[in-house]
Length: 149
Image (tube, rainbow, N blue to C red):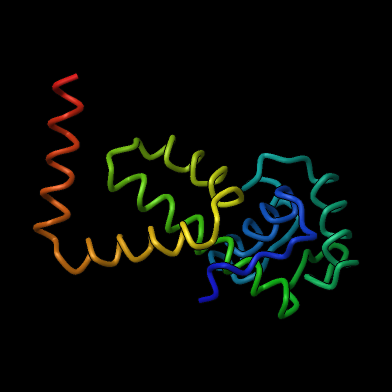
């Protein structure tokens, strides 16, 4: 995974749409306007507008009344964004951030952090996965410090 790859010409909003399209596609096998609107809490008209923009950029193919399908470049970008999001959310959950807050913060951070920072966080998480006793020790220490405050 090229975790550092993000298209510089895309806005945060466009990246969020690509990620939502990927999430819906992974869940249902396709992405329709209503499904993406529900995931993002957006109006269907706004979703159609962004579908058209992403289509014009060559990232998706918008099919009226059917939704969108990825073009290769769009899928690649969406997978990188999702990878960044999943990495950051997993890290935040590891250090005891509540799920809802971790989700919101990961959404913000995925656009802002340097790719090298995300890569290092992913390596840290992999080390934690390799040594569950170390992970448990870290989590217990964080919990202890929270209770001491």
